[in-house]
Image (cartoon, rainbow, N blue to C red; front, side, top):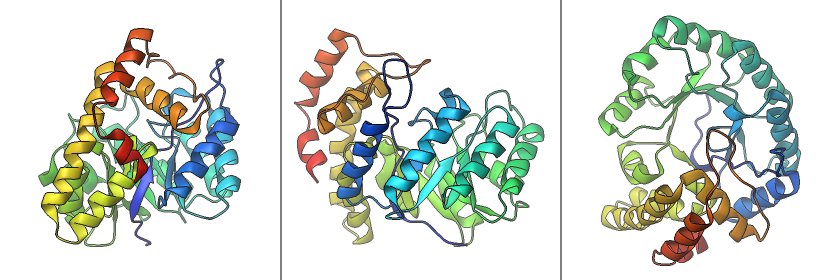
Length: 296
């Protein structure tokens, strides 16, 4: 099974005032990131607000992004949904449009392995010729036991692990015996994921400063751990500012500035920035190394 590597933005979905997909700005964002040399895209995930969108809009994302990328880099689709039938529909639609793999969060209301495992098993089996990646985003879950419970899925290709426990992360890597793709998913701990053996990173702020994360992985590969840590600390100063005002709103606001076109506002349950939050974001962002990091 192919192992995917490198820096993969969890692609933001620009939106119009009515929350429809802003197709032109979506394509501009893809071009901006391709020019930055990203290695792939993760489409329709939490950052892309896929789980808050109707199925038709999620399909439009794929129908827009895939021909625009035109094979320049691979795409992994997040197909997760509360309804396993919707998730299967999305995964099969993605396959028909050329995605190289698919993924899913543990949906809300799936509270035990007795329900989670059948959900993943049915979803993965619906597209057996593509790798399936479990998306670990649940601090209450024993993630190692969870991945062990999925080992019977023939096309299990690894995981996107969005958690802080690097010991647990390494245990999951070892389960794959070198055959799995293991993406780290916490932007603020990218350096530690790389040091523990992540094959790549998927993350939100890879939309706005992908070169910084490329630099982190390059430094780690070269054994320059102090330099990698320094870049991570600089990245985290930017993250602290964004989190303090409302992360998703800040992310769309920054993308709007980078592209010179509005990326819109977050979808519920996330909230738009107030005027005071917007002012605070720009004022405090100027006190970080964001401009230099975004330029990498």
